[in-house]
Image 1 (cartoon, rainbow, N blue to C red):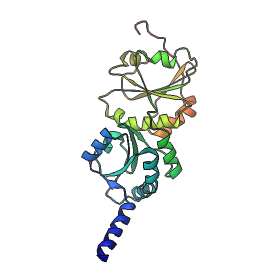
Image 2 (tube, helix red, strand yellow):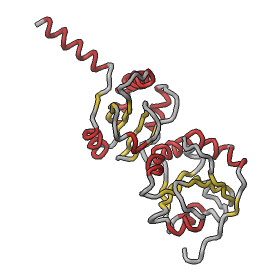
Image 3 (spheres, rainbow, N blue to C red):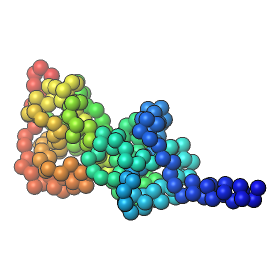
Image 4 (cartoon, one colour):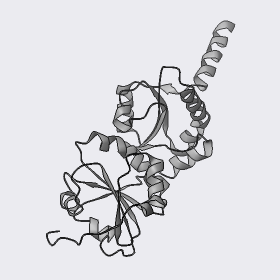
Length: 247
């Protein structure tokens, strides 16, 4: 009996220091049915960074469950990761009603907790041909603020992999710059044509009645944020094309 109790204690201790591992089928179901799911995509190979991420999340797990009722799990060598990022593990993604946000910040309790609790709702707005000019007022440079817009299409793999990063860009620029999406292939066909968008993904910053194309090859959160804050000044500004009469 004593040996059984000791074994139970050991197993409980091991469980407390590890995240629950889920396979892809269960992970897909969690993302589909649960409100908040925090997933550490990790690797079975020697990966000290993966271990550090897991230790940090184990330490945070109780707070994340208490504050958000979130699932906190890990997926090892998951094939699903390629849907959200082309980077190597570890990758930390927060799913809100299935919508991914890729965490891109310090491995610190406070930073992770604040990022997730303050961004439980989507940070990126979806614009269409019907709403683009009304919401952005791009051609007039009026009072709705600056807009950083990603033009995407549903058949674009790179676009799909950028979505989780784009949500993190929205989180980092929250209350400073509006971050948005336009679907070039469906609801934003005319808007994409207006701005000469032929390939996706493409990114444009609309600021004070001018536009700045993000032509930097790197599609990471830090580069996007730096462009909006400072690096757009290095790009030749363009006049915003007038609103076509057919829109």
